[in-house]
Length: 295
Image 1 (cartoon, helix red, strand yellow):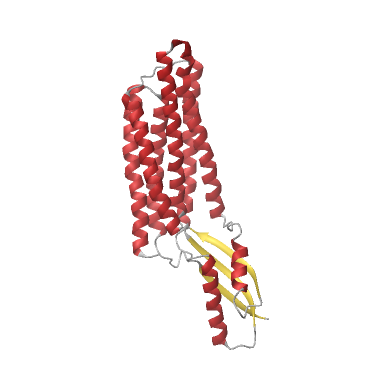
Image 2 (image 1 turned 135 degrees about the vertical axis):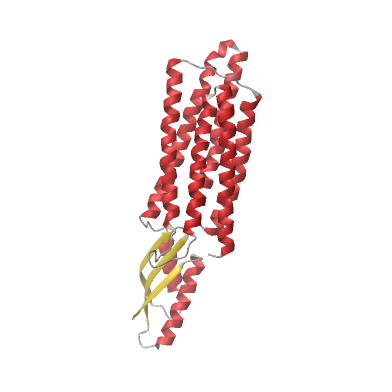
């Protein structure tokens, strides 16, 4: 990957770190001032977002290092490890959120002050999360970075969880204006549990994808595309024993092909280069190794 591409990935990750610092501080201050468990839950979530964003930034820097004698496939797996650790952090957050919300619902200790800042912090959170998830998604798709994609998916989910907290605050406000609807005052704690549910869903999804990458699970349907691309090259009789693995954003492909065994070494080499180009047309940027066998 070019130096420019690495710089763009690092900038996307760094911008996420700065946004997480600002949101965590803002939410914590407003949550403590108003007593809103929903906002405090979001502050804790943003705190772990900060840890996850820092890990993504570090992993992107490490994964961009070239292959060496100790890491012949490069350092790309660091991104997958980062995404898996992020999943563990999110699940730990869920336990804390659900425990606090359940305790408030059971003990009926609900003292919340809904102010202008309660709504301002959550609306700001939605705007910032929408902006940074868009930046991360763009870089992730452009450079096939699973770490950046995991961050982008995470922060796009934060948009919905923030919207749930706003809904909870509105319900609390209604309960203050209409005493007959006093039960709505518990909506803030209910909103916190919904936030935890959303985080659990995204955590499981991230965890499954991270584990799949770490154990070298082949992308669905890609083997058939690569086989078809190789067999479309004139002179290839058959393509078999296709092996695929990702190391971070880089795809490594090994294939065996049956070719005319009487052709010269120079002609066979030229044919393997044609096969590599054909495979890279369906898997851009892939590192391809072709093993020719006589028909």
